[in-house]
Length: 108
View 1 (cartoon, rainbow, N blue to C red):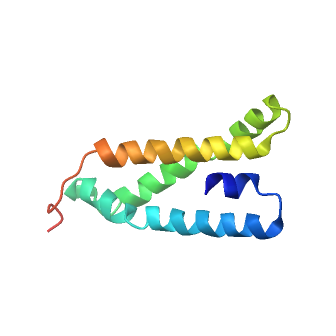
View 2: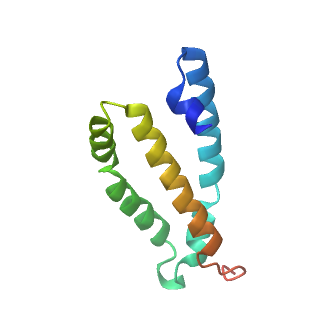
């Protein structure tokens, strides 16, 4: 759905792509707070998820500047910049979920 979202030529197809991207994004991130609580040490469990979210915001604050640089280097191809950064982020998330740490049953 990334090509549909980033390369659509009509408003209707762009809307369909945006809806699908939003639905998948919400589905992917719905479990993140529980996962962060699972990874956090008990002493900082109340603070850890919020801190991690804000650090993510800090890191991602430069993404638009990076995307603009990618787009300008490819002749103002913003569709390519959006698609490549989105696919890279999705791949990194998939690798982290597959190989990252997990501590099931340690919340109790």
